[in-house]
Length: 382
Image (cartoon, rainbow, N blue to C red; front, side, top):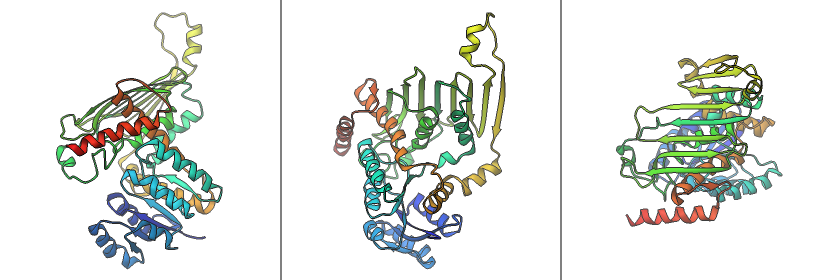
């Protein structure tokens, strides 16, 4: 196989973007051969823009998957549908790349992961669109963590409140910003990438106490203001703060470890590396208020580099990587089974907020679904 033939389920905002990536030659070994949508305006757009380029347009995803025209599929639908469509595609031997989040609740994703693991024995590949893992600053942070240069985690904090969304955003209607259509608010819509990076760099916590406010300063039912406190097996702590009603907001990640501190903010990474770990220094130090000898490493991303990343890396980078993974075994940047990790944190924050108490990980999946369904029913009544 010289080229990986892609089909896209859903050519809305993201799906149409991916269709352009694949039809403009940005992915050397990937080609778009089919798309599918159920909305009339999107079908019309696809027939006007993509059919002349030899792309077959379908209105049923199963028909597209069964057509023999594709080797791989990109799933770009509302979140509840991700595991359903992915499972069907995998069952037909189609390599599957789903967008974030993997789904709405962990039970469905755990079952998807188990099925994907079985299909992997037959060589069927599974990935997720965690495009922020291609960001050079987060990639360097991951290298520092894996090399042990930050040392054992002490604290990880992320304040990301620059997702400003006015009431007009929610007034567009549709499936977004609802329990029934989307499964939540800022945690399930805006923050899946950050929740993924949070655990990618800091690991998974063992307990979470979440505080969420629903419809704060907005006429919506879902959460748009969240503060979550986390604890880790080694005694480290984490704090995740996000909202969609602050302006201009903040986007600052801090990771503190035994051997140093890392900060990423405004396209700039600063790593302060201690010459000796804090615990070693503390064991021998005799001074009253000393400073530990250290050195700083700073990495910045220019506007030019940021523009290049937006076009050639990010989403495009994940598609390139997935294509090369299927064709020649290149290591996946974002394996599909890892989609459950960030979603676990999201579900735990929701569940803790709903119950008004700390929850342990892994969460009670059936309880989560029951509590989610309560909110869907309340939403329907309104």
